[in-house]
Length: 71
Image 1 (tube, rainbow, N blue to C red):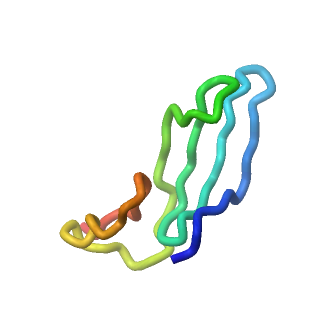
Image 2 (tube, helix red, strand yellow):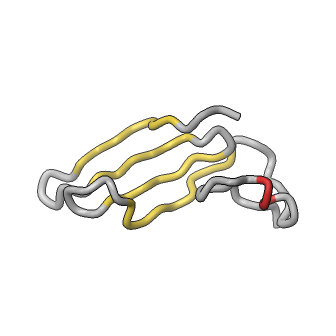
């Protein structure tokens, strides 16, 4: 697996919240931080970089940001 890396980061000039897109090797996620803080307030899955695992296979992903499962 590829280590996590940040693709793009942008800080809002007024709210000072940061939006960050990260690639975790198996999937990419968007994170929104709290004001003037690195603490994540919300996240959203963007896409998988691997074939979608089944629901029973998802436990092999130890990260807080796993890929989306197949339906």
